[in-house]
Amino acid sequence: MEEENFSGKQSLEVIESMINKAKNQFSENGDLYLLWGWWVFACSIIEFILLNLMHSEWHWIVWWSVILVLGYQFFYLRKKIGRQRVRTYTDEIIGFVWITFLILMILILFLIGRIDDPNKFALIDPSFLILYGMPTFLSGVILKFKPLIIGGIGCWILSVIATFISPQYHLLLLPVAMVIGWIIPGYLLRKKFKMQKA
Amino acid sequence: MQEENFSPQQSLAVIHSMIETAKNHFSENGHLYLLWGWVIVISGIGQFVLLNIVHHNNPYIVWLLPLLAVIYHIFYLTKKEKRRKVTTYTDRIVGFVWLSFFILLIVVGFIVGFELRTEYYKLICPVSLALYGMPTLLSGIILRFKPLIVGAIGCWFLSVGSLFVRYDYQLLFLSAAMIIAWIIPGYLLRKKYNSQTA
Image (cartoon, rainbow over all chains, first blue to last red):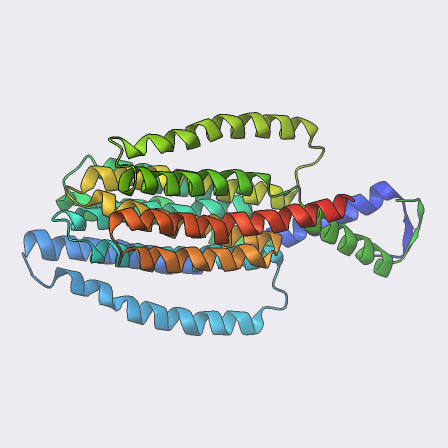
């Protein structure tokens, strides 16, 4: 910024451009969307195969690989935060949106686990689909990034669809949700991030 | 703002003050928190009283009250929208947070009712409490208003706690959540808003 005469209007333009810069220069490169998107995608398909084709009692064990993904994310974020010079207001809000999502996932899973309904397992995947939609939609709104908004709405629609199909096939809706909610937007975020750097 | 010479420092100060103004001068007067907080407290306690003390045939009748509140809510927002001069970025995000909450509440209610056979009613209050925490926490973070953050965490504790009590007592948990999450913060928001406009 040069030292020059600033009218009220010019000042507002500077403010607007700074806000736009802060908004577009989001440190969001899509990496974590892709990491989690592909992980859920793979696990749900593997679980579906173990459950329906191999009739394994241990079908759910595949989800324990979450420990590896969490470990990776921990180191990834530590490195990223170390490099990051500014944490914008937007970054902070998005961070809390994802923390809320995590709390709701744990809480809802716990609540479903505690009741005695014979059909409670049919509730797990549709609940996850609804919850996936929340941070996806809100991140889209906060970053003003349409693919995430569409992906979030897609997750909600899939959760309603889930109630009309047999619980056996619920697991196949998760990979669909991941593709529209996290994987496609993840690649588009990566593309946008690279273009901005170039 | 007057037309004058602006150094970069001064420009930054203007930006800073505008952000501060936008942040503090939130059009949040707490009105809707109070409306919904009180409506749900009255409905929750009302149903409890009709169920356990009056032994009314149809204790659910009290939930017509929120329907009336919806009508009032729409009128209120239409009137407020007309008066509003600017919609800040914060207003917009908070609006979308509440919209997601509303969608989550409807879709979760739908799938819980649809998927469960015998115990759906046991899950309604705990799940609603879990969801109440979401917009409350995020609004608290976005508006940087601690009472809402505390209220949200309270909702999550009450959600877990409500699973350990009989269904009719869960209604009292619902009312307690409203007091800590929406009513107390609602009055504090009103106080802050009034002192700002004074």
